[in-house]
Image (cartoon, rainbow, N blue to C red; front, side, top):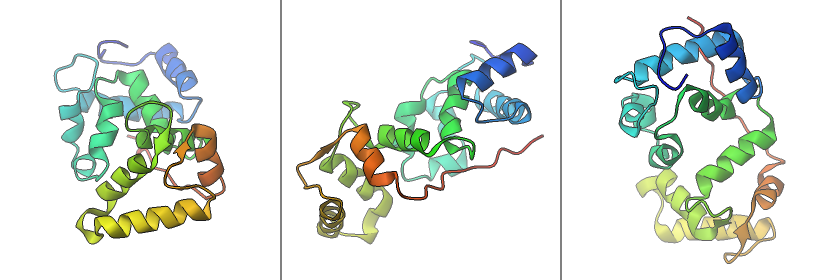
Length: 175
């Protein structure tokens, strides 16, 4: 599966299912494979950042640049594992781990006030001033028992977000 073969074998499908903790059915994996092959324009078995940016819905996502950090150069198995965070069959803990990786901009295993503020900046654009963003974020953190100087590890993140009802789901069209 390193280079893009024309067909997936049953073994390949089962291997991908195991890799993504059975977040997708076999039919969904085949559909994702077809989409992956469409994105992999040069047929090298990997999807580049430029190829991901060719998807209009992805290109307009305010977090696309952050996601590209996680996506650039994925093979098919990694591509499916990345998308598994959006599957309705993925546990809330796995979804929170994914969100944590998006927020951990410097990949140091911790999320700081500035990391969250940066994401908030991406999401709100010109709809909020910098002062409003800082005020809102400070208030939310204080309500959760943290300060501006706190650094959040994954367990902290789980504690804060774990009680919310995350809706990170996409439907994979079956061809």
